[in-house]
Image 1 (cartoon, rainbow, N blue to C red):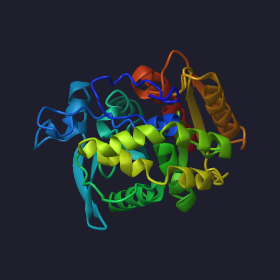
Image 2: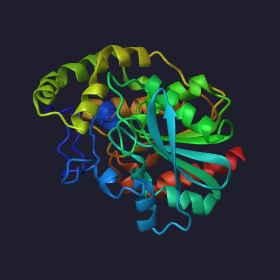
Image 3: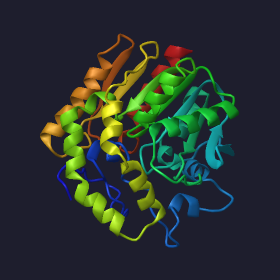
Amino acid sequence: MSPLIPRRRRSQCTALALAAATLTTGGLTACAAVAANGRPAAVAAGAGTSASTSAYASAGASAQPSLHMITNKGHKLAFYVTPGHLPAIVLDAGGGLDASYWKKVAPALAKDTGSEVITYDRAGEGRSDDVPGPWKAQDAAGDLAVGLTQLGVTKNAVLVSHSLAGEIATYFVRQHPDWVAGAVLVDASLPQFFTDSETAKLVAANQQQIAALKAAPQTRATRQLLAEAANYGPVHLAYHKLSWPQTVPATVIVSSQTPFPTPDDAQLWRQAQQEFAGAAPNRNLVVAQHSSHDIPVDRPDVVINAVQAMVNQVR
């Protein structure tokens, strides 16, 4: 495995982490554990109970979310809604992860803020349908927009995006800046990171792993990994040119460990987060001390506090 590939704590997962931060941060760690029957554990939890509902129940949430299956362009997406008032809080997990990733965060936010809390499974994750072909952040942003439209959340939302979901958030906010009152970007994949040299480095470092993944027996997880890896270089060179709307406030949370074991890459990751945060006066940077890239797991308190502060700011 390339030294660029960060080690994820989900050792029970056999999926490959590709291109470090963006495919680990960015998402190719496909870390939904796989049940004995070959289905993701979140789906195998029970036909009548959503992954999020099960996770929230185990976390002792006072109000459990309801499942809403929403259709966009022929594929179904699972959204989970805990009722409350505005601003709604929309939680978007990193690559290879479904709504249950927020089990330490969502119940606390629903209880402490009284806001409506929405989580969802992106296409190819959890209870949502697979979509053939290369994965595109623009398509994922479109799925999210359709889901929020059908749920009646097209204003005053607080968007909370981890890892790969930072790319979705960037496209989403550029398309719908008036829908989002503020965002919390949790060790997110941001445009500033993808310099020409870093993108080329990530692509070269993972060619062998991608080839091995293509040659391996295909599962839902490996197909999703390959979909996210498709056209990785051109996609991220284009992403590097994008900017976040200055009218939308953002809190940037960066992990103290970063997704990278190598000093140069880790430093570039930190610099990208700092550069993004410093690009407008309505942004701030928070460091999650003693945390891996999995801040919602290691330091849910940091995420909860940042989201609560954003909710209070935009009310």
